[in-house]
Image 1 (cartoon, rainbow over the protein chains, first blue to last red):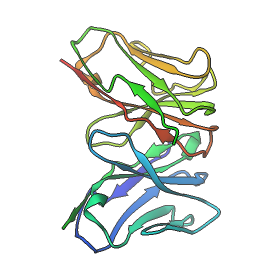
Image 2 (tube, each protein chain N blue to C red):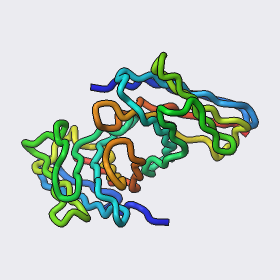
Image 3 (cartoon, rainbow over the protein chains, first blue to last red):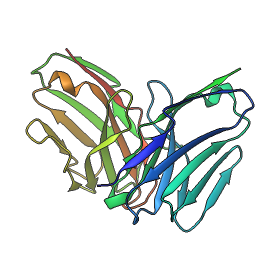
Length: 110
Length: 114
């Protein structure tokens, strides 16, 4: 099945800095790559997604880039704020279902 | 804004007991998913429904887990008997269709088996 690797597992930044989380996937047929934010005790919330026909997508302070040749995609958060602190998951839809990475715990220090 | 509803939010049970979780997807969403999330890991798919039919239950431990979506709307996931290793967050998600459609998650049910 699909294998999604996510790095780093923890990320600590100062407020206002940028944060980058990277994922790789194994199924070359994957064509949909969402990113979810999960706060303590809550379900994952979709924050941005990208499909394989584009290389980059941006929504205010959040951007995602996709390199299909290398089978990796990244989440970029600029001007981080304390409320960005959460666990972030990437996913890929290989073999007909979403497979999630192991998650990145992002901590933004005021 | 429409949301996926789940109940209960928390459940504590003793091993060998039966437990059941309920999910009501976003109205109009044909595809419903049950995931299990162990603490510190990403969600893992247990079962996927398209309307009332199961399309993927390859990761569902069928000796003790069952899931149904009788009328193609809400769904129930049951565990009988519960084991200590079943302690996890059980998440329900829905999407308009399957195959690359955005999945929206509910708040989850946190299960603790003692």
